[in-house]
Image 1 (cartoon, rainbow, N blue to C red):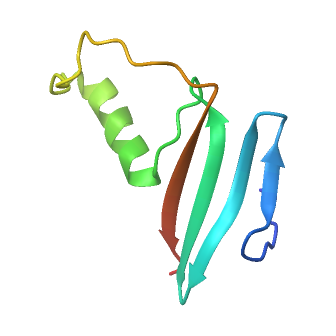
Image 2 (cartoon, rainbow, N blue to C red):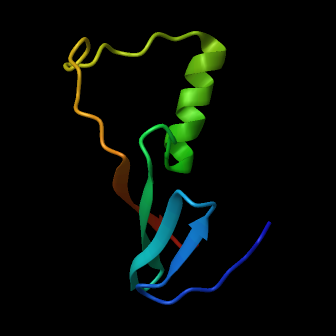
Amino acid sequence: MLVLSRYKDQSIYIGDDIIITVVDVRGDRIRLGIEAPNNVPIHREEIYEAIQREKQEGTPREPSENQGQVEPRRRFRDDVLEFSLQ
């Protein structure tokens, strides 16, 4: 595992298409901004694990309200994830 130190507003690039920026640090919580192409899935660990469990169990997911609707495509999406340092 590569471990890097960054200050608020500093970024890390992964390849040419993914940028992770430290948006805020408050006590033991860090907010990360992530810029990535739409085709790159980004999930918090607990969400990722739930998705993997669903795949293994074959549990169908609830249909989305937007199912069947086409959303406009963007080249990049911006997500902010918050982590606790414990």
